[in-house]
Image (cartoon, rainbow, N blue to C red; front, side, top):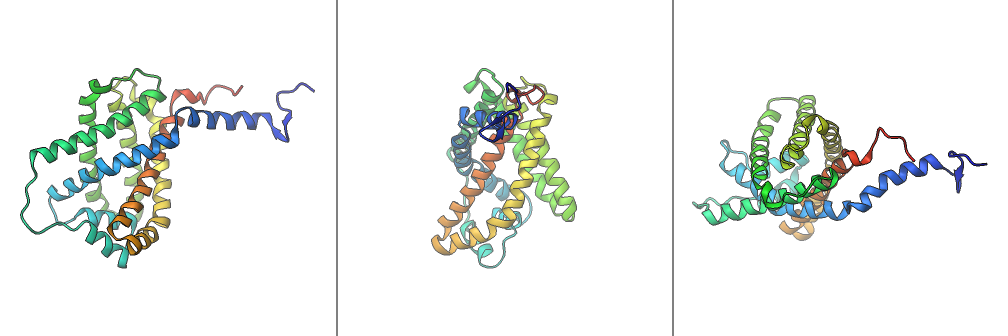
Length: 260
């Protein structure tokens, strides 16, 4: 019987088509490799940027305090993070060269993220011409990283979840909007931003379950480098969220079009 809904080896054909639509862009756009590369570059660029922001921001909170709160660490794992991110009490100076290296590293991360959005939206790559938009995104990220902890301290658990979701949605909307040089109207990026917020919520739940014991065991086995391994794993998860939202929130998926 010639029917589009007949079984293919015991599986409905429409289910096979749906799975193919989900898997094909992941393979075509090298989603796993991209998420690994984004996580690795985030470790070398965003972590130093956040440490610098925590150092120059008013107040006594450090990067270690932020990580302890983020992953709900305590006991030996919290002590290990404090030791790994301990700031010297000796007077130090930030050289112009170190600031330039940091900016170049962060811009390298933004260009990789920019290419991801350009590929998923079928836009021409702008390369170095998009550097200005990358700098604008760094400013937005710096403001978000500075304001978000202060808001968290003033609300309860429910407020923390609401603020985190709202912040992830706003950042998920502004990131492709800026890195694509405003070539895509922000309204078309709303679904992608929603996927980013949902992915960050899932990453937060996974972090609450996995990160505390992972950091504790890694720190006990390898010391500070073990904490770096655990953070790389979390950043890989962040890369998966960004790549997944970029792929499945792009027009290439054609969610409103009927499957073949």
